[in-house]
Amino acid sequence: MTVAPRLSAPARREQLLDVALDVFARAGYDGASMNDVADAAGVTKPVLYQHFESKRELYRALLDEVGSRLLRAIAGATRDATDGRTQTEVGFRAYFRWVAEDHAAFLLLYGGGSRRDEEFAKAVRRVTAQAATAVAPLIAADIEPEHRLTLAHAIVGLAEGASRRLVERGDSFDPDEIARQVSDLAWAGLRSVHRLD
Image (tube, rainbow, N blue to C red; front, side, top):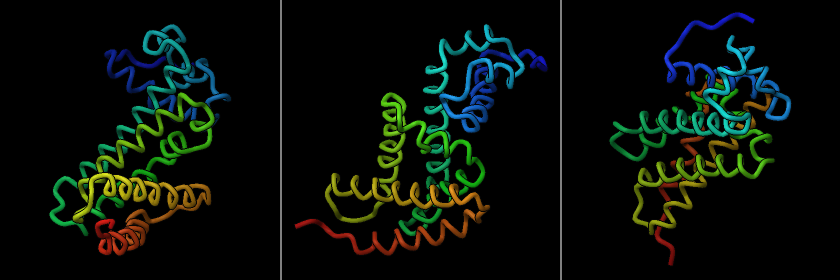
């Protein structure tokens, strides 16, 4: 085991989360152990347990961290967009770049392992709900708030479904091209949205 350099507590926690992401993405929750994470991080198990009391706590923290990274990427990309069409495209571009650059994070968040455990599935649903809540105000249509939120969930599902196919195929892909294709579909649908009677 290579010994990791001395880090501040916040820096060590971040390093442990980054290493744990790779370990869990490769082995799954059931196949990975705290020993595996400690060895990969170059720390002893007691150091790992100073930051996370259990494997479950580490995995929950990792789901939250990965979800936060995704939400920050989308929020940062859409912040300065001035119209609905641009917001749609740059939001999808940020999402698909995140998937292309970090398959491990996508698989951790949306892979089957996180959905088989109710506690982990709840954490993933929370991220999905937060993403939809962030997307809803970007839908520039004169519709009821609940209708807007339902459409936002549909947009998040559209991105997830397309990403799942791309990741499962294992091919590399151009995230900007995929973003253009998917945002064209989403924008065409959003332009025809109207109030429910």
